[in-house]
Length: 61
Image (cartoon, rainbow, N blue to C red; front, side, top):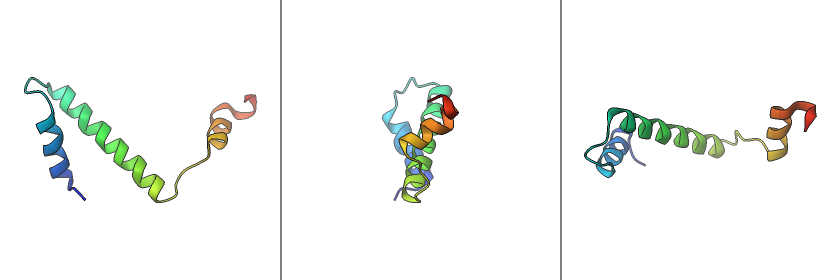
């Protein structure tokens, strides 16, 4: 498993040399959110599609 520093280096190396600070920070943000989501799945912190619809739409759906 990569450390945060290793992942950051990999992201930066894959980006264009002309990448802006905003683009770099966005890539870091996305990487962090994806990793948190994958950890939630691994921990069993998920809901079914029907439950998600019910929570979002209430009784309307």
